[in-house]
Length: 175
Image 1 (cartoon, helix red, strand yellow):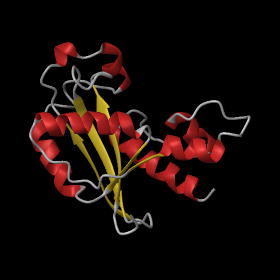
Image 2 (image 1 turned 90 degrees about the vertical axis):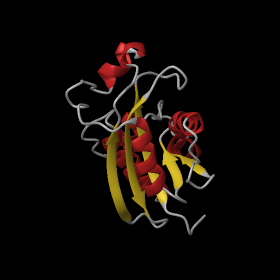
Image 3 (image 1 turned 30 degrees about the vertical axis):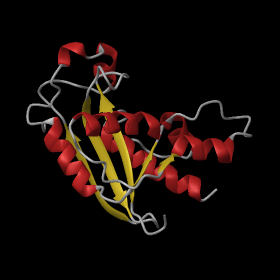
Image 4 (image 1 turned 45 degrees about the horizontal axis):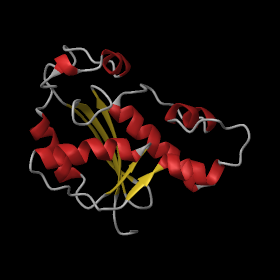
């Protein structure tokens, strides 16, 4: 695994159900296995079925039609993502949520996942290293950022959350 780059990925969606809701934003920070920053990017994706979105999710993700006016189509965004993260190990805060949405989109649209099959979850890593700490009740990105003094400039924005996850991972690896 040491020879693979890492892709810290965060997605924002129109809800929690990957079958009925859509990805509207992908943020990614690509690093070497030694955590040297290679690239960071964000892809806004124009929703096709905004009418089925959960209003709470849209509020949390700061969705407004104007900011998404020049967004990519889902297929174009996924093509860009697949090319940029080829052979990377995906890292995420609650990685199963993000990877579940991505795997569904890949499958539904006939794309092959170009990432390495291993995934790393910062919640699992934090739990393994900190579960005995009586002062820690939650392992959310917000709480982990607070604990480790990590600034997340725009929470629930894909690139900001991906970058905060990258910073969190670096802190956890030093424990």
